[in-house]
Image (cartoon, rainbow, N blue to C red):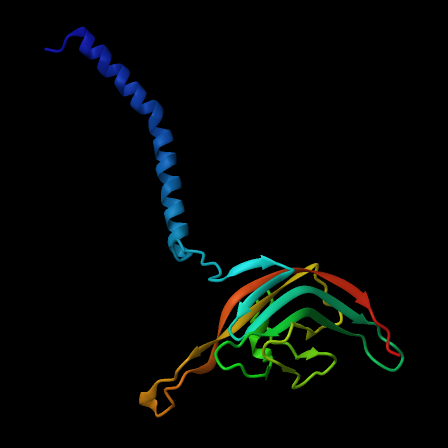
Length: 209
């Protein structure tokens, strides 16, 4: 036969359980709702970042057979006139040097080695890279100092940005697969990302003369 103390303890325990039962039911309900939301949204998805470093301009880095300096960007806007529509272009200042220790060849800088990194869109190649106002075919001679060059990107007339990012790619000095009938001698080929350079954008206005 239970004693009076046992009966009192049982009554107290029952009241405590009833008092906290509602809180436990609410907590369990919240957990179930969260689990359902996670399931419907595809579960816990890992956010994957860049596989290369992001640095601030001015920056100079080795990219295959070139040394690439990125020092700044200008957004140049041309207002509409009676004879022409409004235009704009983005110019990125570069310092390019041929450091080809493998072949010592004089070559032009390939526009495929630069990308304008546009949020939410595919990276954009420059329209051209000019050195000493020569748009196509300017040859960088191995061993000479860096040349001041400009990468130009077309943008919409109403484009605005306080800063941009430009990705730099590099070729690798490797040989092709001889089983496919190609030469097994190494050569510069392919493009792999090296780094992303972030820089502030200076906006200027240019009038057509």
